[in-house]
Length: 172
Picture (tube, rainbow, N blue to C red):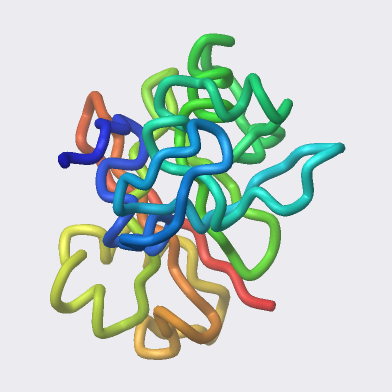
């Protein structure tokens, strides 16, 4: 079964926000669909949602509605329509960052999250994003200092309209 389309998070399996799991039923629909969401879930009443929901219940908004949950912190979004904020918060898989994650924007819209990158990923998978990452480096910091699964880490995005790469760096 193909995963639902997430315009703002086009490959949640590659980013680690969704994992293959042939045995886990979804807490929302009670179906076993072969995938489980492992990213963040914010709910005042339900603190155990990560690892318990299928991507389909996130995509159609039923998980957000049933559990009064959000999957992305949209507090840093500026200059985007309310519909985009709602789409990101309630119908888009989030991602885990060292600190609080930030969703980047461009062209009055949220950008697509492509994943974490260290120096190796910037060479192999995200070469076109190197200038965006370079702009985020602190004085004395080098691209070779970055680690995908360590720190500091680059979080790579791409604008859905102008195709410009965007990035921010994070460390614990």
